[in-house]
Structure formats: structure tokens, C-alpha cells
Image (cartoon, rainbow, N blue to C red; front, side, top):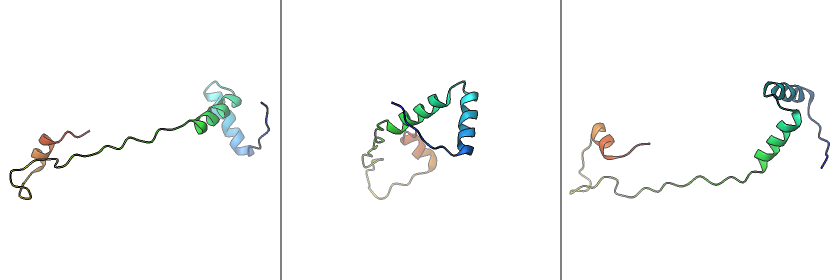
Length: 76
């Protein structure tokens, strides 16, 4: 389908320059932009924590230093 859009001169010059750098046509870049805009994005997965993260025989009295924490918990 054909359509007409008004692109400000400065933006069109930048678009044309980018197209030349990528060895693409202006049409290809516009269609890529439309495709990205229309893509359905999946919401990010929620990572749930299970408590307690660190078990203790005496809850509330656990004393940890940074080294122990890093040893007990897998950090990404």
C-alpha cells in the first residue's frame, strides 16, 4: 500500500545519511521502524525470591560479612 508522510527536512537528511551508511534504502529503514513499533513485546519475567534467602538456626541473629554473603547467594 502506498502512503504519503511528511518528514522534516533535517530528519530526512539524517535518515538518508543513515540509509547510505547501512547500504539500505530510506524505504527499508522506515519499514524497519514500523516493524519494530508494531512488534508485540513480552513483559519481562518477574523473578520471585524465596525467603528466607539464608537460613539460620537463630533467626534475627545472623551476622554476615560480604564474603559470606557472596559465598551463599548466586549473584548474576
